[in-house]
Length: 440
Image (cartoon, rainbow, N blue to C red):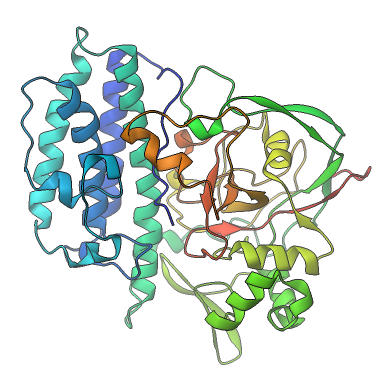
């Protein structure tokens, strides 16, 4: 995984200076709030190379502001610690060396308190920097906004990484036991019946279009031709995925892409990540601890390979990212997102009406589209251009956000991307079909 670093911002950041300062303080506080339930030992945990310790996430997001804003643009600014530019660089080759990613869990030094001092030091300087009308040009305001969106990406990673870390140890501790409350909001009945929203054949404009923040991989805005298609009215559920398992889905090679079948065999997959059977019943590990699998909830923690195989089994397919964006255009950014503090997908309570349900939140939705540049895309110059264009290979696009994504971080044009075998993120499935006249 490429750590979902922010790509270069290409539009102006909104709001007044006071508004930007408030947004800065609020987003930084969310990060620290997410880490607050974790002990210093918890924040050293790195259960696999794709994950990073909570302490590292807090330091790296701070390093971003210090490196790209304060040190580069504030004359006389002195680095908090001259070792930190190396220790907390992730993979920016133009900025010099960095430790191997899989070794971050070995960083017992600096201690957590030193990292928190680092955050406080940079925050003081950043708030002063933001308040300076004489130096805060529109370009620098864009850079601050980029850093804030970068931090929001790491907020989601803090949750997904600690979930994998807690699942990997024998005690299986709960990150947020109270998050289990409220999961019965869908009632005791099953999920609403799956229906289909139809979209007409035509030429559509895709990509970011407004004056608000966006990453460079969402641009340039361009036109695409789409044949008519249908999109499922809701996400695929655990109950439906259990039917796939019971029908031998993981033992039927005709359902799988070749690389997916090889991955299933080599990794011995037989269910989504975090699922296990006990006395014939299925349980799933969550950030609230081990819980029985709820058949009404959206299935989560499946790879692109599993999503594609399930879609074939269901007589459907995955949507392309263009189809998904057309369906989501104009839909409100609301749903089960980070602010709900459930940290887990929730059942859908009511059938979809005006537009497909659960487009934002609950789980990221795998699409059938490889992560590639839009026509005319050019990565930004310098180190800030490193963390987007160079990942446009061997990745698949996901859309929509998850229960761990901040609401203010999302929009219909947002492109997430992961390798097709990745499962530790909140990734799920929405079915699509070729054109027809069915409607919800």
